Image (tube, rainbow, N blue to C red; front, side, top):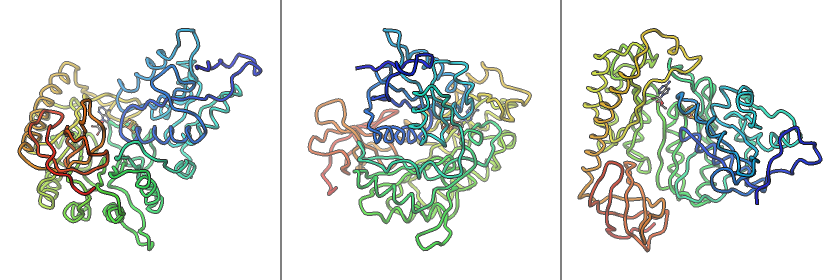
Length: 458
Ligand code: 5AD
Ligand code: SF4
């Protein structure tokens, strides 16, 4: 049953009580997915019940992304759609990076928005709901020194055997195109003890694979259990000692934080999966300089050489921006040459999108949209071809698959290879969370199909 939320001018006596049901919708990166899950867990712990999509919920949280203009604008069309047939609407909260970047401006532009809450203050959501019910303004984009993590409830039982765990947030690197240093704040690392506790809770809740998240995850620093300073590789080694944890992944890394210790961990830690997402953005040194990336094509390739020497089967992934201001045909050809040389197993590529307040937005020589379109098409064609090539190379091999979800067909399960490829397999007796050996029979651009080889002890 819908409980329509009354706008603020309705007298207090006729306002409804606290929302009983909610829906959190996350856009953007994996950290937003993680934040969305933590918000949902918190609202659940408050006694609220999750519902499916959209308008049926008493409270809808739009957990937004500000990285490119298209993502940032999407929130406004989504808000417009949250009107019910009977003219009422749910209570609407805008969370995430658009909330951080635009703050109270959001409710001025979209008056039906009740709550605006940034990525560092969403633990205050219950309090903001209370303020809304009292007819008070509910905007919170603070970046408090005390971390939100301490105020969130512990991790409950998880529906899936794979989980995200944020270990680091924010960015001090200030690439000239990027909003993250402004929306997510300065680089901070969560303490190892808090991370270990959360990992143990996830394992107790049925998780077998943890993906460690951070905007610069490999910039993590902290102390080990004995109080000695250590880097990200030390944290990985500590996590690998946890019984029950089968696989560790991490994303996203910056080339300049790719330490020898982390590279060595790829050779030495069995639970650390052979997959590295290492964005390069461009194959032109002039563009990398204008982007303030602080690395060159040569230094990036030298890192990949070391990583491949440590873990020859590693799958590489990356991010690319085409049409950064001043990008010439020759600069773009350099990106194509780099892609051809590296042969990524998968990659993300985007047209440059000027973001308000970033230095690149004010640079001259912005690249026309048609040129960006054409470059993106060529780049994506090359990246897709390499992805197919990478997937095809798995055909005929026997690989360990961690089963993550049920497939569409009877007995079908879907899991991942160590190299992050999705595999469809008929395995009616296998449970989610099982690790099974699968013989790969065929490959497409986005997934593999295989048959059960033998059941391994889970
Ligand atoms: N325009 C286009 N792409 C961007 N990215 C970050 N900022 C922008 C922007 N202004 C891309 C980068 C980054 C990924 C998360 O999004 O490739 O690595
Ligand atoms: Fe989008 Fe960046 Fe915010 Fe993630 S951190 S939601 S990618 S703006």
